[in-house]
Image (cartoon, rainbow, N blue to C red; front, side, top):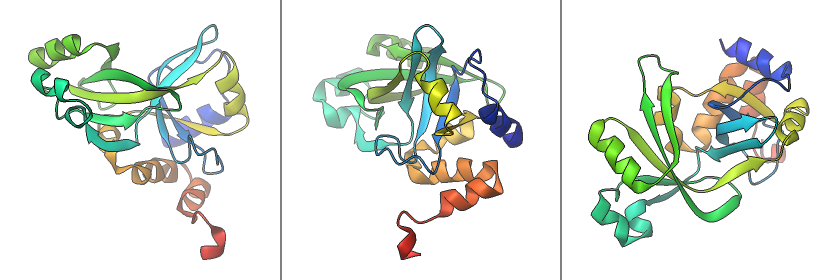
Length: 195
C-alpha cells in the first residue's frame, strides 16, 4: 500500500481529489513553514484550491491554557496545534469520528464549539483538536508543488493521528516507510557536516 501511495504521488493527475489525504513534506523541502510537516487536507478542488492544517506541530498548550472561557465549556483539555502560516490568529476546531476501518473517518472541520460539544455528548470517543491558522494553496499551486516533488501523498489513519503530538518523529516514521531512499533522506541530519 505504501508503494501504491508513492506511485500516486509520482503520477499525480490534476483531476485527482486529495481531500481527506495527508501531505508529507519531502525531505528536500526546506521552507521553514513546512519543514518535516504532516498536513491534513480538508478540501481540494481545481476551482477553489486546497485547504489544510498541519497535524504534527503542537504548540504545547490546550484551549484552557489559551483562554479561561474554554474551561467552562469542557474544552480545557483540547490540544492546540499550529495549523499553518495563513491567518495564525484564527482558531479552527475539528473533530474526527473514526469508523470501523483504520483509514475511515468522518470529519467535522471548521465547526463551532457548540457543535463540538454536541458531537462529544453523542460520542465520547470523538477526537477534537484545534488549530491556529491553516495551510492553503491557490488553484493549481499544490499540483505544481506535487509535480516538483515537494510533497508526498499518504492516507491518514487512526494510529498516525494518535501520534501527531510527536512532531518530527511521526513525519520521519511515515516518510521512512515509503521507500529505502526516502528513509535515508528522512534520517539525514539537519546539517550534513555534523554527520
